[in-house]
Image 1 (spheres, rainbow, N blue to C red):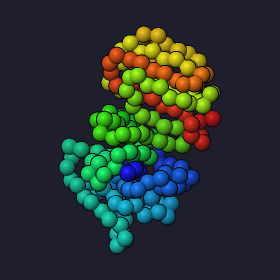
Image 2 (image 1 turned 90 degrees about the horizontal axis):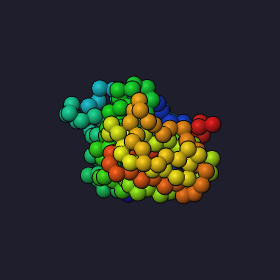
Image 3 (image 1 turned 60 degrees about the horizontal axis):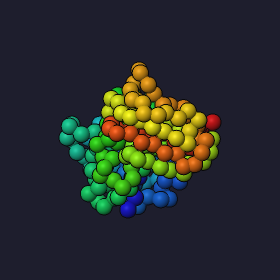
Length: 209
C-alpha cells in the first residue's frame, strides 16, 4: 500500500501532484498541506495535524483528524497514520522549501521513519531526497544530477563510484567535506559507508535544468 502526504513547504506543481495521486492508495494532507489538494481541485482522504494552519470553511466532505500533541510535527502525525493504516511505501511532497526550521525537522523525520517504511522519500519539482543504507547500488540515467550529504553530523568511510567526482574512504561532514552537485557517469551508482545517516538527492525533476 502506498501513501501520499503533502506538507506545508513549497507546493508541487499540479503535474507532479497528479502523477503521485495516480499511484497513491491513501492521500493525506499534513495540516496546511490539505490546502494544496483542495487548491488543485482534489480531495484528500484525510487532513491530519494540530490544525493551526488548515483553515477551510466547508468541511462537509473533508475528513479531519485534530491531534494536539506538540511533541510531534504534522508530518510525524501523518506518517504514523499512514503506517497504522497499512502503508508500506510513502512519498512526501511539500516537505522542503519555505521555512528552514520546518525543513530541517522534516529531514529529522525522514531519519526517524526511514526504517519503518519499505520506501520513504521526499519529492519536489527538482528531484527526490531519501536515505540509503550501506551498501547502496542503483541504476540511474547518465548525466543525472546527484548529491550525497550526511544528516547525522557525519558519515564515515564514504566511497562512491559511477559519478564524475568519486570519493574513496572519506568522512562526509558539514563544513569539512561534502559531496553535492555530482553527475552520474556510469551505471550502476554504488555507495558504501561504515556509519552515519546518508541522504541522497537525485535531480530528476522538471525544474532541475
